[in-house]
Length: 121
Length: 107
Image (cartoon, rainbow over all chains, first blue to last red; front, side, top):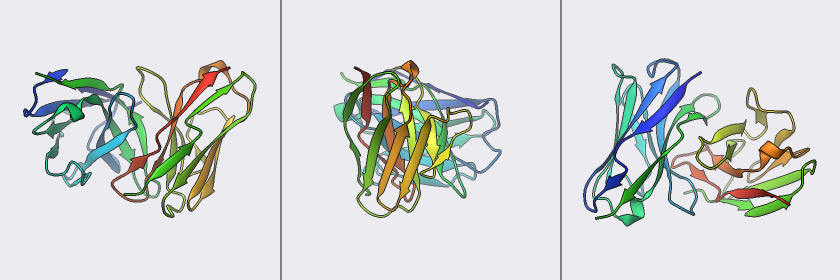
């Protein structure tokens, strides 16, 4: 069974770049028709889709974050990563990585447990 | 963006009750609608995909229905482990969007 685990700093200063990595185990990140996604949830709020990457390297981002987001994949390490630049307190959230099954249906099959990132000086 | 509106936002029920949660999309999304269960500190769990398909390993007391703009998730007989927050999500078009969640609590 595929498992995902987020890792990265739990505290980031305002204006800096948030960097998280998702390590995939139990399967190859290169196999199958999957997108690899990042989703976040600010405290007391709903889930927000950040963006996704295919193993080919093609990406899709939420337009609300597009100017600040970069998602990349490292197939040799079976990992994919999120970078969010110029963070503010509004970026404080639990960040989840997930894999998205594609074609013909599209859904998030496996999720990580999430990691809390706080933006504060 | 497609707006997803869930109702109710919270629900109190007892073990054995039948409960239904609804989700409405701001435009037609065909059957590209998924349901997730989320417990604090845990990974969200896929329950239903494509509006009505039960994910492997999910108990049959969970069912989904609907198409177009109106969808529902029904739990036929609540079990103690079902008390959680439930989210709908549209996968019709990016940016994917989620409902605000329905918190199911023990009465």
